[in-house]
Amino acid sequence: CSKHKGASEPMYVIIAGAGKVGWNLARELIAKDREVTLIESDHRRYRVVEEELEHAVQYGDATELWVLERAGIQRADLVIAVTGDDEDNILICQVAKERYGCERIVARVNNPRNLQHFKLLGVQPAVSATDLILRLIEHEVPEYGLVQLLALEEEHLEIIELEVGEHSDAAGQKVADVVLPDGSLIISVLRNGAGFVPKADSVIEAGDQVLLILDPGLEGEITPHFAPNGSIA
Image (cartoon, rainbow, N blue to C red; front, side):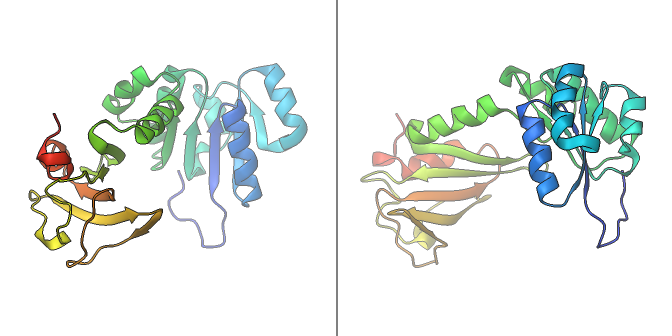
């Protein structure tokens, strides 16, 4: 992958898989003046997409090295694998990263049960639409008021959202007085549809949505401070 582009050179993106996701990604990136090559292995699908994207789409199997090299993977800034096959997406991203030194990869996970395989093989970020939708559902009806918003795997950090319960330890306290374990920090408060970055003397109210950044594994210590009566049972 290219590492030393000039400031005026557009980002070059290779997308494997011209399904709805890949086609729409290519369309949006081209509209943002990115250079894009979309690779599709189904000839019928390729012909359909070619009518719109023309030279920006190529026919071939992106798991084959010569297809990736024909697409110019040596100079790609970003490789996105969004085929309908999880094994193909893992392989494409591994090849892009390990053989061609592409630092930025994104993989689609069709079956959320395969997420762990992507992580174990070092293919990150791996995005599962099913998993994201489940998180949204859980956000609407959170268990114990806790929602994991973001996991920063490489930085070993998480961002979570907690609802402040009635009669909880945190309700009515200043941010500076909320007792939290080392490795955690309140970074934002959402109240009545608006958010703000709290100061040390900002008072947390019951019903607030509090965002915290923390070291992984601290959720169990933090949740009781915001749960009703200090209990998640």
